[in-house]
Image 1: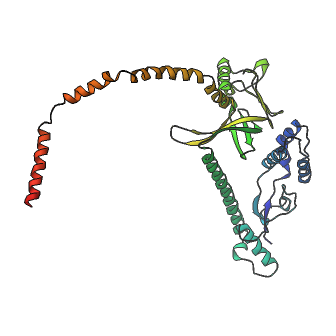
Image 2: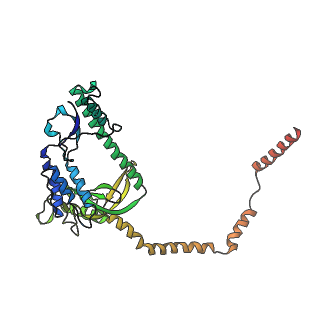
Image 3: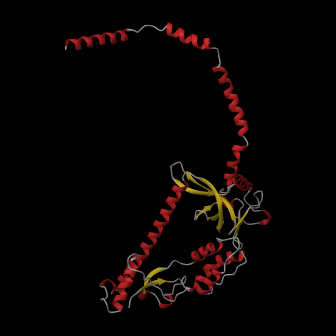
Length: 351
């Protein structure tokens, strides 16, 4: 019989967990990916004291290493592909109340047909038709996920539109030109292009200077010309730059402060921006240092104006009196108005 399920990724998925294994190894943990059951047991043991979000993050990384499950018709794939890797089950299908997903409705119709309660629907008698319906459901499922992500991104942008905050973030992944961080307080993620100048004002200047100096890493380190001296180590999942003062180094699962704000382009396009806190720290400390100097300048600028206000009353009042005394009488326009008013009065009396 034709039925629906979740097509599992092939066994070669083990090679997709290389990054996950290296990430856990950095924290002194071992993950067994020989089977889905071993993987689940390893993830249960990934706990670090004082790091409550570590288990959540390692599970997120494990999920992203897997291929997304899809709907399929049993006649279109081999039985070896029926298994659901993430759930560690040899065969899986939806069987909830048929009020939410169309896949549930199809499963219930097929179940009713297999039990002899109802006949097999005409649309499900053709294998080609069943395969087409599965592809359509997979497409709509991906579109629904995209809509959900877009909606979350929109409301996150609206939330931060009038805010400029600095919160603790955790490095979730490291790339050749930057890092991706997770903000536990808000449950959001964002990328910081460190190699492209996303590391705050001080680090931007140092990065630009390093790029102008040649972009080559010190001590024979290899780096891309476009990375301004930043070197990515795939084994330790870290990004470093020996040319920048302080030799900054960012590694997966590092905790750091992240500035979150909304950036607007000249075309009034808005997006959520994240960067390292050097810029936020600098802008936060700027007002405290020049505050006394600014206040002195304001006092000095305000002093002459107070002096002008305290001039003798005669000098300021006499011109006003003179101007009133020498003010010319109303011209023809004024007289015309008076005449006009008299005419209107006469007309009113006559009427």
